[in-house]
Length: 408
Image (cartoon, one colour):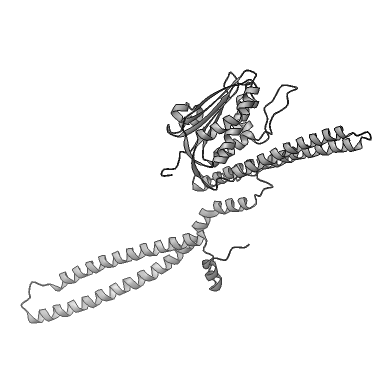
């Protein structure tokens, strides 16, 4: 839907006024400044000349022989003549100066138009180059090569924006391709299982039930993937509401729900859940804690350990970028033992559908969306997210969160 025309544009179109461009406004500003300066100069000149002529008239009209009547009449007549002459000279000065000021005002407007156009030429080039850039050529850059001024800063800012947009578009394309592949795989698997079962002429009821059971398993996987994608999209959209809650209670609930799985895998769990009041979405924070704990469970070693803690930054002992947060800010820390993770891989696993390299014969657990959902939820809560890979192996995650709103 087209936006309604602005009032200034409607007035310009009705009265055939020129478009109020920056060049026109600068030209008018230059002209007004020159006229104001010229008028002030004319006033100062007029005052100085008037003062000078007045002193000349007084000195000419005064005489030491003031007793003579004839001389007094002559002096009066000379004074009147000088006054008339002074008035005529001042009038002529004003008229001639006004004409000169008008001529120079027109000249200044023309020069101002040319100078404004020359000054704004790089801006027009930047605008023209920016208009040619679309989603198909986001790799293009302005690469402005002018003096180090505000226009070059503007061009550099636009280039940096284009770089971020290019990265975002590439990330979106990869996400769509990966999501399509992940969604297509269980569908094709279920379809293949049913086709094989139906193509078997000696199909028995137990075999059909087994095939249907496998199809249900793949459907569950697809449902989990769709739910994860919806959670990721919801997190990236930001928070539509906030409410105060205690992160420690949310974390305790998640730990209780996974206690059996942790014991089944032979892992040791250490908890230090101090009170951590904050404001935000408790359901999304529950997803964040769940994903971090499940990631720590999946990517662990036999006989390994998991540590999860909540509280303020000083009590939890934040490290890395999250250590810069205020000491009273609530922090969630989850660390686990496991295989060594190269430093270059740490940030990559925050992207959707990214898995760490595993030894041959080891299947990837999970969908590759857990940590990307964690990053999205942390960003929605304006939290500081820090990932560190200790030299001994495993992963340590710190999330510095917003404190509970005052007065809540």
